[in-house]
Image (tube, rainbow, N blue to C red; front, side, top):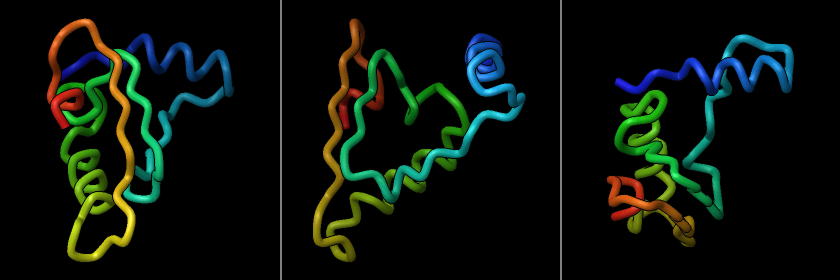
Length: 80
């Protein structure tokens, strides 16, 4: 599992909170992942995958979310 130490420090300095936010991937219309593997290694991957899949369910969603991934190496997020 990835270490969220640097992310928590940055979040605390920016917002004076020690708890990282829970992102609503299922409600996002556009997702930009800059060197971020939120489906593979970063954060709560089980929750991230579940919510991401809900937002891209072809049977129940009229409009699929768009994902733009910029990365140096191949990741699970970039392959989706």
